[in-house]
Image 1 (cartoon, helix red, strand yellow):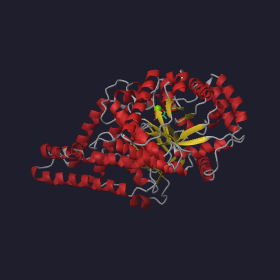
Image 2 (cartoon, rainbow, N blue to C red; image 1 turned 135 degrees about the vertical axis):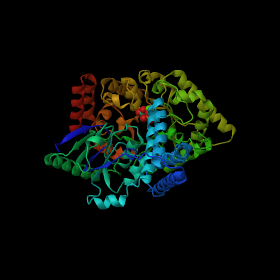
Image 3 (tube, helix red, strand yellow; image 1 turned 180 degrees about the vertical axis):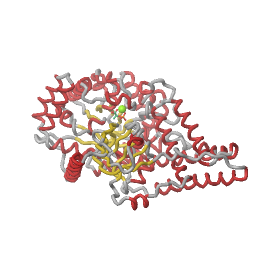
Image 4 (cartoon, rainbow, N blue to C red; image 1 turned 180 degrees about the horizontal axis):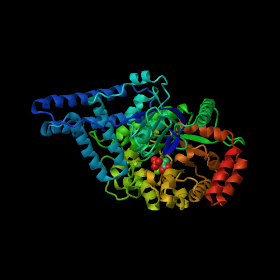
Length: 583
Ligand code: PEP
Ligand code: MG
């Protein structure tokens, strides 16, 4: 077959080379037949047995999770276990067998299709991803029913090249990906998914090259085809000629060598060649992620996305975590960081991160009642979170960070609520840090353009480039159809960033970047040239960014940055950024 190339959304970096292993969706090809009255109970039992087997499988995956796994991995399995025991999956298909006499597979697929259609009608991006979870659970049950459950032992035996297979699938569930890790697969390709899908998040946290959103790759790629995944470019090369294969093998070995070298930087301080010290912080979702932050040598946590404590709690008696539960999580984080500061962002719920309890009625949720806007409409809930954070501040240095704030009155109301929470704690004789620093996320263009309002009222600022880009360029960050317009080097973004950094510095208040730009080593020097001294990123990125810093010289970066800031042509900007990296 002739070589060809497919493009998708790069979600996890690196290069993988191997043979394709196609994971066919079990839902295709299920048998459809009617069972007789006498066979109905046997068919019901067959399905019940399959459901119970999958339940056990999930428990096994859960109990075998390595201690150092990212916390969200366990949460994903929980979601699948919850779906599995929901009556819509655990009971309705059994009723379908009893009433319509469908065979077990047909009954299950009918119900999954029905639920999927209901999700399609909602049309919300986050919920669409939940639909994928339901389908993945359904496929797991089908695999057991049809006896096609993939055994890892069989896989490992059938291909001597263990560790050199690339999984190609319409979609892969996070639980499946977990099972396969460290065993057979060195890369992942899926037709579905976006930057935000669970599978993408798991791939990134496991550090396995992956490209998603490939449309019909699973139909075009054949079993055992040779594949190259370029996880940085989002490119997959099918049946590459040997010259290309050799080229990528060289690149791959170089990457491995570079990674080994990077490990040596763990204890090296992040200081530029001309002696300026840079602070490198970690972005975390759960308190357990602090271990990875410490391991990478982070100077603290620059962004604790507290909303992850609030999401996926549909099965809990309390749909929201109580003040005490939250306090425990925040305390755990600050204790784990051993005196290094932990910046806790208050609830950033809404848009692609809805609360299970919140109704998604907004036509355009990214522009709707999100983050601080939502918190100000729910003062009791917000006060409980503020009290929990304040109480944890008695156990180590904590900073409070407010997301998506744009108006002076929002700042004033928020500060008033913080004072109210402090007063409540004083009345209850509870300890907290009375001088806890309060900062704002600069992630709405309106905020970046009215910095004097913020520097006057806030102790520090943190630039959320993910949303700043989304709102400045008017592109939904989870919509893959406009993903190509997502450009951190757009001059509008560069000006908002540079302006925010310069004005904060003039006002004498600390500013960091905590969006994905901060963890992209290709942009480190540009940000340094703009005057940025604090970067916050996923712990896996810290050493790559540190390497850029220790090799950089501010004296040469500053004039080059000025040149970039005068340019408007994309080609000129891109070339200057490249040039900056080469010096
Ligand atoms: C951002 O918007 O850049 C950010 C860091 O926050 P989130 O990605 O959680 O919206
Ligand atoms: Mg944001």
